[in-house]
Amino acid sequence: MVQWQQAIRDLHNEAWGYDWDTHLARVNARLRLTGPNAFGLPPGLPPAWVVGDLESLPVSEWVLVVSLNQARRADEAGWHVAQGYTSQSYWDHWRFLNRDWWEPRFYRPLVRLAATALDLSVDQDDEATFATTQMIFLELCPYPSRQFALDGPTVEQLAIDDVGFRTAAAIRRLLIEEAAPAAILVNGVAAVEEFGRFHGASVGLTERRYPSVNRARSLRHWEGVYASTHGPVPVVGFPFLRKPSTHNSYADIEHLGRRIRVLRAGARHAE
Image (cartoon, rainbow, N blue to C red):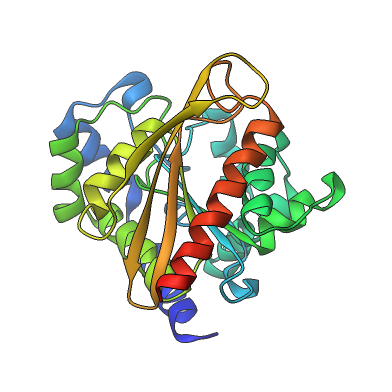
């Protein structure tokens, strides 16, 4: 492993021995999070810090996708517990999740956007492999919930004093600063707001509005450049893809991907 990969693996290993059940019970009680707002993890297991094969990323030819937090699915908890994970097998589970458990409804639009941004064409049969080896998915909030109910000041405080949020932030910064992504995609309006809250000093996001490629309505996204230590990285945030009022067609998604290519070219020229 290179240095940044080993640093992330070390954080994964440190989190493996932590009592997350007790920790989240205290977080939920302190923040009065109940019902669909409550955070939860499979018993005895740490958060899924990243999804994707960190050990196989091509240098500068991969895309980081940042979302707000995972959906909490109670029916999965027992399945995870039954796997009898070790630290190694849990690491490998999240490395190869998309290869082994492909969910095209969520991942396919993001794969199409990332592939266009990289000026690549990916067949549907190869989407799971592409999502595994040339994309990394992570969450700003490391704890799953069915709804996200925290306001900005509370999230800012958690970023300071919560072990999970601090670990997630450390991994995110290693990926952005050391692993050299080609672009950062911020998935969802709430994630765009929180990404700006965490990284406003390093990237200025500007809203852009324009007509849909093939429908009479307006679309929007936010774009900027992250000033990382290894060079400028394009950042593009957008409402959830494939929704009636957003980039619902693949023509619109590919149009956005071509815009990211323009931003990449501009970032390389500015180096």
